[in-house]
Length: 141
Length: 99
Image (cartoon, rainbow over all chains, first blue to last red; front, side, top):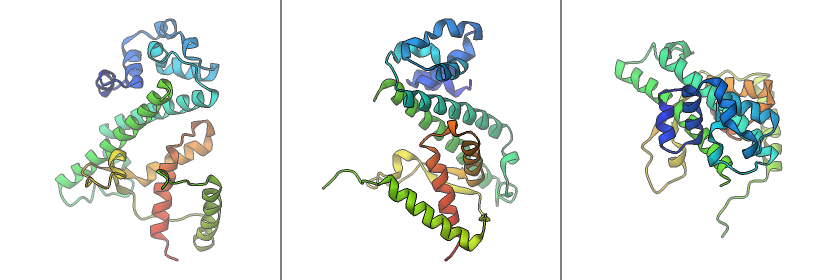
């Protein structure tokens, strides 16, 4: 869960709510709340969804997903998790990801900060994109 | 006039094979890119040519490479968005290798 998740949850992003929920609800209760059968997930997708807390949003996704959609949702949720982790790591230490030394050689602190902000915005944009795709798949649009 | 551009997957596959073979004949088994960061336009602005883009982000080729390595290692991680990472890397190669 990130600080951004509750914000995105309030903005209607299903996955943001899921991450918010997993950060708030004790893990043991997630499975009880999940009712994954209601959204028609396979065992594999259900495991992924339970692990990510996606099961808590069943009320808004009461439809049966095709197998391909289930796989897509699971893959997208993994991408959200991986990107969220990467974003946290990047925020903590942008220089650790500066493979060719661009930050170190930046002509001014302002330009260095612009690159860092751009990278953070890029990762956030990709996460939002994945969340939008998940929302569309779960919403059937 | 159709409102959508039809892109045959078979054409993409064949063009990819031909062009990657071309690249390999020039560069061998790897292309060396001396760039890493690149400007990216927010997806919602990328194709809206009536409005000049204002929201730029910074992508990173080494990160695209890392994502593709993960997909190849575990194909269950595949999403259609991975094509964007592939495209970013192909553009980097296409603009670096001159022939």
